[in-house]
Length: 334
Image (tube, rainbow, N blue to C red):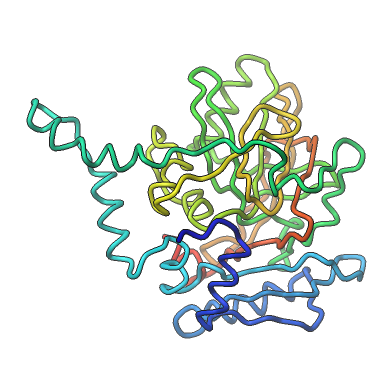
């Protein structure tokens, strides 16, 4: 059976003996990252960690646990994708992504079984109130300071969201994109989105800017592990990430309508942040940020996201990852 939620994924990791629960208070500023870094650099990627009492910037203890290094071993990636071994899933992915345009009738016939398998698992829209909207905060009630976002390195520009699914839509064709970009938390309801020029989300933003229209954006945190994986996967822009996640897990991903915009969000996400980018506004300074090279990416100017709503489960877990000098968790994410 596929894993539908982050909670199910964490439970499966614990059952496999690869989860360590940290019950002592640990600070979200630098301390969680330091412990995670040592684990990730240990043999076989180290255990997944669940910090049950993260200490916030003001010294209070957050009721929201922090999970990190969830994907940081071969066994855990297999659990996430529902595979016994990585070679099994690798063959399925290769066959899908290496499909070429058929040249004749017989080649078209040979292609049908692959296309049929992919078409079995389109995302489904869920009715009613989804789990990701058990708590809904809008407007002035939004306070991102309540979420235990991490400061991972001493020279970082602030707190960062490091394992998001950033959902945007092509304004001309209506094609959805799900990407994983770092996001700096600026204030209680403002973010800086690190959309590098070659990313699909950045292309959508440029198109909306040319139109002079606000661009809706949704940031989903958590959800089923296959969807989290696909957010980081280098897929062709014509392949829908949630369709691909359904293909990997052999079961459709359930989506729901966002509260303040028309974008669809993973119904089983832990946290969803909704907002928009205004092309008429100046860019904001994002960074520095400790990066994969072991050095800091310099601060630069990127779009500002105005947060219109934050929704979440009643008892959410905040999943994060750590970016820095290898080896890190992203070795297993690919």
